[in-house]
Image (cartoon, rainbow, N blue to C red):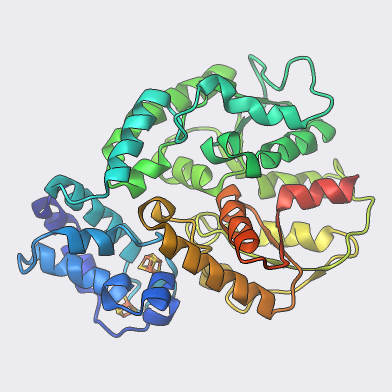
Length: 381
Ligand code: SF4
Ligand code: SF4
């Protein structure tokens, strides 16, 4: 997308920004950097000036535009409802067109096209997480037909720190008698990183492949432990299957008494709303209902919750383009969690777990970070 296209699509939207600055205290990158170009208002100004030919895209605009977390917190507080995240991602397409975009994004695209996963790993290793399951069924959760496809996603497939998430989800579904399959080496990246990289047109090949594989299984439902895969399927794929985040399926299983909790869990826990699950796709209550169904656990809300939740620092490909900024945002998040007296932060996203757990370890913070699937498994045992 070049500036002329952006002008047609987005000028009215960006012109809605009245520069009031209400969004400044909600933008995690602004709170860290304290510089206008790292805020929603500043980024909107860049987009507007670029459309008006008052500013040429360059390395400085690249830095500002590619350090947005895509969290959407700015829109949640904006009285004009400016869709800043969408404007920024459209601006990223212009940055790519003008040749000013992070080299790491170019590399990522090449890797995705060649390896079909973000880690440049062998696709046959996608189900490596199965090694965490003691009694793996003979079919290793790979069936030709099933009611449900469990779409695992690249991060949980290839990052050892979070491979327990698909292992836990598979155990939960197995124990509840859900007829599910994984796609194994046939699952390709959903394409979400391409949207953040400003190259959404390259999504088509991944989308077509994944849709075909799911259709072949004949599944009526697709379940995701990854909010970004879930979000991408919701907003960029066209599938007749019912799309469910893991928290929605688990809650259904609890209500249908297909899983039961036998163990008391001690401690004080809070919940971090992942941006792509909560604000960007609208799932807020199911994770909370699951947490409240766990015997013994004390639950406290963060002051900024649901649509006002603060990003963990793991969004928008910023971990790749500016790892220090991502780490500083994560540090701020951990401080807000500690401030409510929680010993555990629960979330429903492998990227949030990675970001917060890595930061907690590096800063020697005594905070336990858990995905909901882990909490459920612990309470079932
Ligand atoms: S994006 Fe919204 S809240 Fe932020 S400066 Fe513009 S109008 Fe104000
Ligand atoms: S989407 Fe998040 S990081 Fe980007 S400008 Fe808005 S609040 Fe800031």
